[in-house]
Image (cartoon, rainbow, N blue to C red; front, side):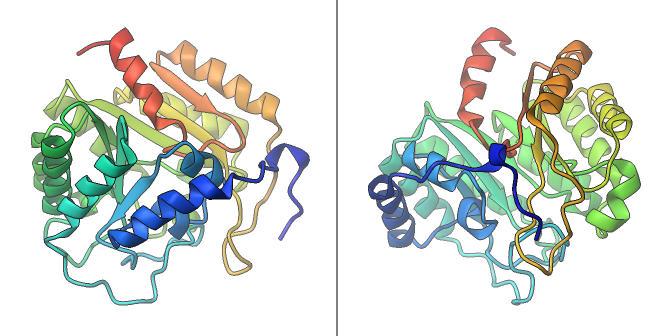
Length: 289
């Protein structure tokens, strides 16, 4: 793997706080995308007492060549106790904002929509003031399943674009660029009070023009919030990093996104889709719906 530049180095975490979060997660038998996907911000987020919960996992039904989540194991049946255990974790961690994501569950008729709903309802019951963000898969284009999730009224509906249109077959072989855009557009139409969000990785061989085109496409379907971050190769078997993008380029994309009308653009080498996601609480005060 290519040597990382200095701007991608992260500070060593305070392991006492990290250990406390991990202890709660292990005690409640919960998975986090922070650990499963080898996120570089795990120390900072765990130190802050935040985590992005990975439900219905950790085994995924897709094998995206950029992702470090396991796809070789057979997915297990849904656990009816998972929503309540997740809600207990939110209580014990005293989270003001929670992100709930999942592996792809193409083996389920609704792609796992009903489990998302159960988790939303459990958190709302336990922590009424906690804002909820769901980071969902594309559900194979099952728009009835999308309606089910939106009917539970999460505060934020996040679905990552991940890459530019030209690279979709290489980066997301089981995904479709146009389907991602349609999911976000339908979300806005079905639930205009729910903020929509998406994220893009860079460093996979895309051009500046292609990134800007993707940003324009996302605004055209009403996407509110955008994250842009550097792709990092998890292991030798994953896609190579084609280039490391300097921090000033991310700043240019942030300014461009703001000029397009995104309510918020978070762009930096270490940005991930759930990084500092709790900032949406302030955004909701500025742009109420």
